[in-house]
Structure formats: C-alpha cells, structure tokens
Length: 79
Image 1 (tube, rainbow, N blue to C red):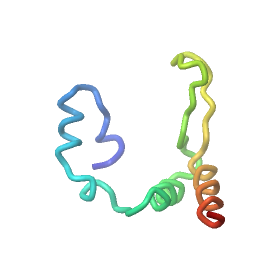
Image 2: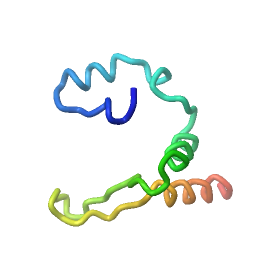
Image 3: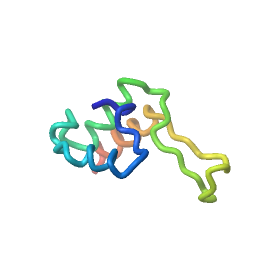
Image 4: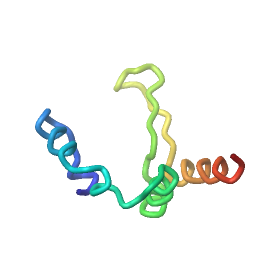
C-alpha cells in the first residue's frame, strides 16, 4: 500500500489501514531505516511541515527528506 493509497477521508479509511498489520505495511525495522528509505526515494520531498501558528493558512516551516536523514544519521552516529 503506497502513501497515495493511505489517504484518510473517512473512518472506514482509517479502519482499513489499521486492519493490515504494521509489519505487512512497512519494509523497515526502525525509524532510522524508514527515514533513510524515504530520503533515498525522494530527497527533496517535504518530510516535516511545522505550522507554528496552528493555522492551515500560515506559512509552514518545511524540512526536506534529505535534511531529516542527515540529522538522524548524525544523531545515530553520536548517541
């Protein structure tokens, strides 16, 4: 099930996703592997969007996949 297939529009969408075991949906075993895989597939894609005011219309601060991966890699190496 790809990311596009997991859009939540109704409670039934959520229930359908929850019905599939997590191990069957993910090909990785750790958060680090998940971040690395996402950064490899599309390094320029937005990984995190932070809305500082909580308003959907406000300008979001965005972190790219590659930035998130490099931060995770740094933390993994030193901790």
